[in-house]
Amino acid sequence: MAWLWLTLAIIGEVIATTSLKASKELTVLVPSIFIVVGYGAAFYFMILAMRHLPVAVTYSFWSALGIVFITIVSMYRFGEKPDLPAVLGIGLIIMGVVLISFFSKMKAS
Image 1 (cartoon, rainbow, N blue to C red):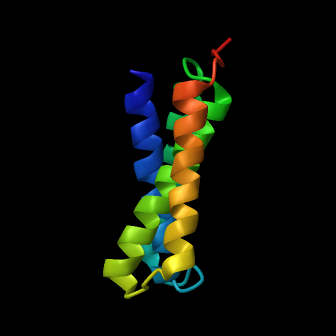
Image 2 (tube, rainbow, N blue to C red):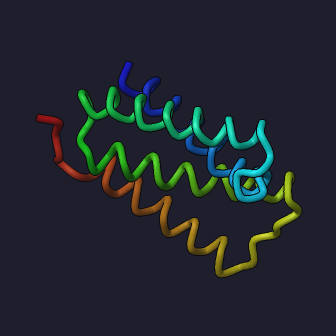
């Protein structure tokens, strides 16, 4: 169940973060609502996930997948194209998450 909570937290964060640009500094109502609800949901589900997963694993997945999905959404929604250094940086972030998640012996307390 913890991975479901973490997935919902990531979805909330991606929705909220990609809505920031569309809200035009919180002057457009619907994207502004998505920001408040998305970040609220993200932190609520993150708290639930951290009950069962180590903080480092939870946060690294949340951050890394958030970056990946926000980059993908930004490509299609805003026409932003990541260059080679951006793609390499995202690759390094993902490698870091893999190391923390699958090779570390950390346990949730």
